[in-house]
Length: 421
Image (cartoon, rainbow, N blue to C red):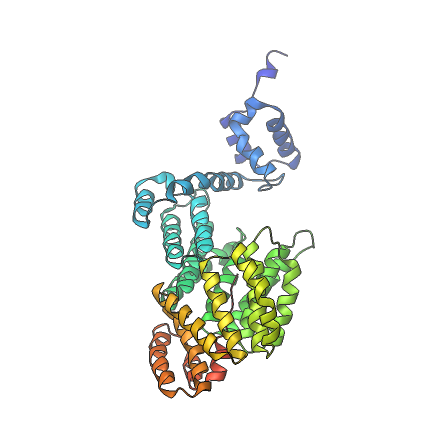
């Protein structure tokens, strides 16, 4: 025996393991050893943790384990940055290499996305921090160069989304062009090694929708759906399929095909995991209200309002409440309750202006202009249009959107209202 029972794993042994190609049987033995021996876990416990979390399988590389470790440690880094101002957090990232990690870049991107529906400027700040981290990473921290390029595409896509939510379409397009170029440099030779592609496609589809580039948006969302739907039923992410169907419904609705949009929402509803993303159900119910109203069924929409308001108060945020008020105003307008509708829309526009959301405020003005047109308030319509056109021009919205301002019924359909996932 001569002390063999006291031989434990060391970092040197693990380095040898990762430097050589090992059959699956050896990997299984290593995982077993880590599971049963506390001393061995001191050297390779992160491998076992990654396996138990489902982040790696029986066959794995050092990069797989390092990525898992980086993502795990990002939680503590995020907790340190979260209470700081943008300037303080940026200084922390630039002043300490411990904040320049792969996992933190991903985590800041996700936090930006979650902040977006509540606070668009906060979303932009967090996405900018993610870009700072990703651009500061060097090759083999912990991945090779092409993988790093894909991470940069990922964070720039989230930055484009944050700018889009804030209504800054020009900055959104600049960030998207950066994302496209980094993705080309990485994925052209490596493929989607990190699983980022369907997210990137989905975010880009949202941007193209808001830019009124609907054919491109549909192609992108169909490509994302194809990736999520590939493979066996066991590996399909049904929730993400549902999420992307909600976005596809929004695209086809703004193209004017409300019946198809309604059908897509009904297809999406049973796929959504309410525990995983409670707000997504609110998006579905809210958009159903909007579609029913625009299909000439405002009474059905009004009957749904109490339950949707309940859901909004339970799972929504301030902007969701504001957008639901906007939708209620449109439902009342469809019911010819113009005074109440006008009061709600004016209140919503005022709140959007106070939040610096000029693009959304312009859309509310467009709906008000349609309402005033029905009432014959020509001067009020002229005043609204005078304020709308410069906003759309400043955001590079295509000429067909501006031309639609001359025909208000069609314009309201072009700029349909609803929540995005």
